[in-house]
Image (cartoon, rainbow, N blue to C red):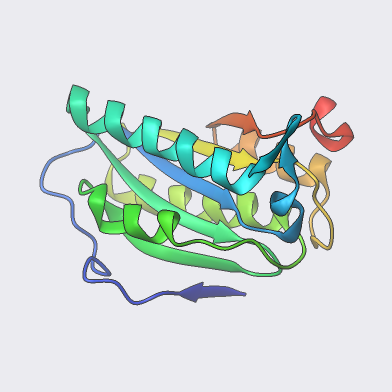
Length: 173
């Protein structure tokens, strides 16, 4: 079940043909409250926010011709905004994100694939990518890692993962 959070940028905001479409999937599950590596005061969700901020800075700084969308996930997936060139449209949601709930990681990735597949209909030459920011401790998903990987391959979606914390056994294969 995909929820849509209302934002000022809830309409698609694309002014030029994108070279690449990226869906950022951001883990906000309760396991993200765990310490980041050996830092007791610094949680995984805080580290993930920092990774996202660095990604945002570089994206804006290099003026890439791509569009982005953001999915936050835990027990459910929330689409923060539709595809947009305006990264600031959802950056504030990342900074105010609090960790809670289970980790339906694979369901969120499948939802991101579906979003990219739909966008590809309008922009057939667009490269499709998912940037996954998670500790990889998936639980409760209706999809398995294998089913998710098959969907990524079938739709030619590139997936980059930033594993926050120790490498999860479900992400090793």
